[in-house]
Length: 472
Image (cartoon, rainbow, N blue to C red; front, side, top):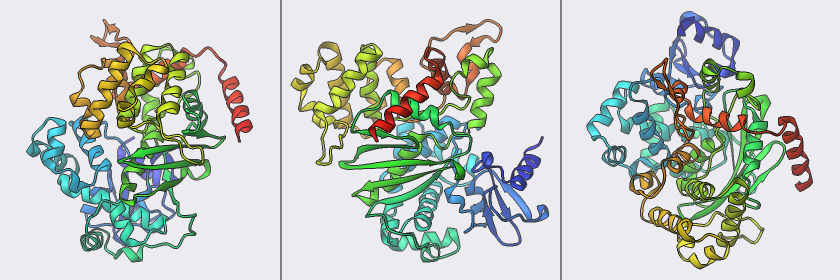
């Protein structure tokens, strides 16, 4: 089946598995939609685009019924420069574009700014600057539609430093003023409510078990349909709770945050922690294709997602401790690390210790059993996190093992093609066994871990459900 016939069938059946994988422009109205849009235009009046950027470049405005800005994202895995493109796009998501010039992003990746520009133009048809501003504008439209934030705060939360620039750029790209998108919602005690959509199926039981296995009490909370945690970002403390809405293929997320300018970065991290942007059918297809015994590999789920960590720093600390201990003792050490060094609020919420808190409390680490080489490794890693911004940390560390670095890339950066297991050479294909699972080797690693679980999966689910009912 060709892409064109696949797109046509997906939009006519409103198949949510294709949400965000392509968009359709309606020639008679000049708008572009998600494949799940309630509108069903005639095929002769439709043209298809693989990204929202292409539709906007072609002159289409976003639909106000299906809101394309709310569609799940997707990591690029089938283009020539996928690794470079994804790294650059992720840096633009985490930081306001003004904070990262094209030259700075290119330097962090290790290429020239000219080469970076050429890659973006080749793959998206637009420059890196235009791409970044378009992402900020689409996020602004999402906030205008889903929240009650004042338009001024929406502009700052989306990464614009000038209200005038925001208004001009929004009107230029969207064909309307920001105030025309505004939807009246009920306020929620000063919190920010958003919906983060995913492409189904989403195996929530698998994710819930994954989070529960490494839960840090009082820093994270897990209920039957919810996951939440505290966080510290750029010196500001906050928290979020995400409740899965299986009927509408989304998470309803409530965010507590003091600095509204950090919202875009926070939302990006939540999306990554919940792994909502994965093309899960492609992951399943890839793993199924090479697995000799899928009924054994997929003991718990056919649709694995990566349960993320908040930051490179948090993932690194956990990986360093885990590598030095067996699973049970490692988790005890991580809990002691957080509860003895991290800030605890008046309402009992715990926060992961900051690099500065660790540097100032080396003696406290010794009291909880973190000594010797493990202590030295943690102190060196925290010092690097104080001196460098997050996107540069991995370039400036030389004391971590390849396994720890791969764990950081999987759980903090959401990179889909890392592998932590032992490479085995396949004589028939003349490559390692695990290369066959590219570009989803990270997910293969998760399935390898699942394969080694001896407990009955249903028993695990029942036990977790009982524990959460008791805690609630």
